[in-house]
Length: 446
Image (cartoon, rainbow, N blue to C red; front, side, top):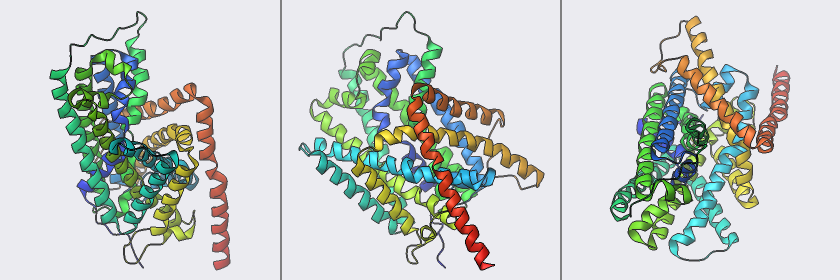
């Protein structure tokens, strides 16, 4: 009987964490934050606070991984802390929208930037065709084996790191080329505490994504040690990249210009390279989006595989290829859903509906840590490799922040948030059907 192969180590875990976080947003979001807070110190403060909260979140997930190093990660935490139906709804949302939509959005972004990079013109249909080819290609690569899929993801992530570092270096040269920048005009009614609160929402969304590495626990060597270390190293690496990128953008462009633009990274590169800077930046963003596509296709199918193993989803998804030892049907299903969303062309709207749902589960994960600590203490379980510092206060702080983001999004977009919750809740009747079929099969067997 084929089994998942434990071929991944700490470096793989860290790069998967970084690959799940760093998309194309860091090339855009510095300007979004600048529109809210106006001054350089507050801009950097927002990114520092966001990084600290992300590190607390990674610490919580690191202890969860150390205590429950089970395949499926967040899915397994929801199942064991609460009820299988909650875990199913999480996996259902990943397949229906979250991971599939993320892959589709990134593939379509690549299709948009490729002609800019090459200096050619493509129709919308041709760009969609490129996106479909990209998704299909990475689906095939991940079917070849976990090492092949992880190495592809790692290669793109390392390239992404190098390109971001290159933009930072270019930014240093841009500083010497730039004219003196006037500080941003601060409105008389400006409230820094309120502004920081508004800025933290896009900042925290930029930092989210570390949880995808937990999906791969079944293919990690010593996952109770590997995953915690990989999560913490990966998030620390992202914080360093983000802070450096923002510092360079602020100094090179100035507060006013940074707040006025929607393409801060492109503007920084253009200062040094002129008009060709747009094509250089297009190449960087294109590479970044490819890395995110392969990350989504690598990680999420392990959740669907575990759902099938638990007999709460289609049994075929638990099939492992006897040669490659990967869940090829689950990987293929992920690819098909991503392609379908790319062809429909509504993935961005739907993805926005469920973005806040991730933070619902982040809060539930924080509560799960409290539950697991209580259970393990009562059962005299051995101390885990990693324990979250300042627990329970740090855990409760993260819980408040996570659900505070959900409340903020609910106030800003109640219709979209309710639609996202509706998508999540469609998993309940689907779970009930599979649970009934499973119980029926068990009754017939007995």
